[in-house]
Image (cartoon, rainbow over all chains, first blue to last red; front, side, top):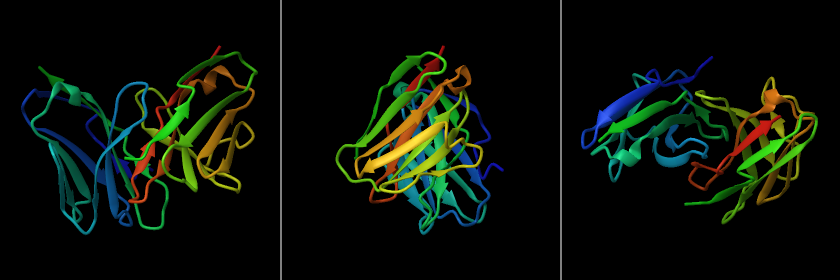
Length: 112
Length: 114
């Protein structure tokens, strides 16, 4: 039972354009969401998070949007840079639960 | 941000031997650490939750006797893959939760069993 889904396994975006990565979840208990970036043979790096009391959180080039009614969140990267090429995982959890549930990841490729 | 250090980054071992992987939180105390395994082109699969001073909690399907976890202190958790087989070859990653709830990950360990 995949509670966190990233339906696009890969995405290619031109350098300078906006990259939009999507994530859907099914568990209504989730109230905290995170995005991670991962390079091959390395551990994931935390990017940005959002609590369910918000619908938007911004940090530099990264913005995460949360639509609770649709159980959907997205990560916007603008402008996209070649160094953004990596696999992006969304993750979800809820208050009192220490575990994170990860999506399957989206491989983002930025085309110079 | 918080730093989690994992060692070694790569290890090759022979079938039947055991391998120990260390995970350290360098600038904060982590009462709980997590061990993940990642297969090629797949998501991170939680193997177990490591609790300082008590037994680890394993996810369904993970063999406790094969993947021994020890969380001896607030800054160190170890995963020992015992009697390793080629199918244990994988990328193993540890993480610890920070004060704001975000998880910080180690660099990962690429285990190859030959």
